[in-house]
Length: 308
Image 1 (cartoon, rainbow, N blue to C red):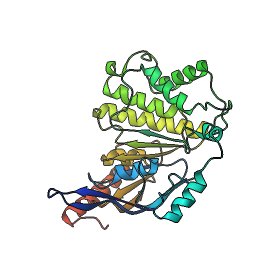
Image 2: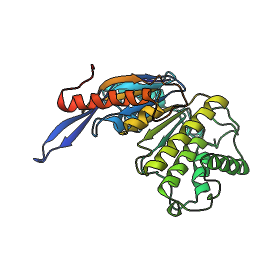
Image 3: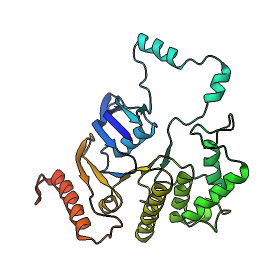
Image 4: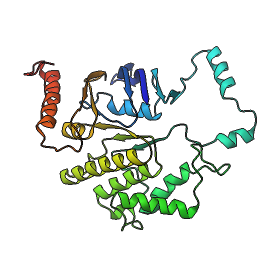
């Protein structure tokens, strides 16, 4: 379960006159996402969707509010007073260098993130990219991983990497470099790397925006297939995805969260109650898409043929 409580993100910026002024990217956003659900964040450019996603991942700290995953904070708020600083130091002061060594680099939450620009290492082969991610999750201490899964040997790391590469259709290119792959194949590599660490949460920021329409549909279907297989065989994975594509959001999601123009607040939450597997031409799917387009039209022109 992901729970966002009253998230606000405020940036200080310098205007053209060289004076400091404020910019609120996200304003008082609260959201609960149950396990095993796919949720899309949809809205116009600059409405704070990606900022909110990075706050979910712990890559940014909110100015106000908190993110909880299974009841545990993603980031502790930074101390702002002397008393808070003393409490902060007391809470996180380890008793010895040995304790620091034991806890260093262990992931606090099982989260994987997929970016729009693939974010794969160009100097590593396809399989090395996946193994690198697996090594980061392979606990260096005590022979047991923090989630109680057994530490993998080198052979097991490569076997697991090959398994997930096969799952996304990259079984025959594991020794190629990213520069030798098409854009769609590089995004498949990013997907394989994220899935290989078997996260409980996958966060995706415009993951299919840079590929052509046919490849995009194939990647969407691959994502649904892999999500469904994981849900049946291991544990229910949460997927939260930022997208500008209304049809993609409706086709993939259990719920679409529509953000208002900046500062980003939740404009509407639209459950997608169409049974899977879905057809992109299903009248029920198309009707929901039309409703969402009407919301955007209303925000632009303050008029709509739909009752909102």
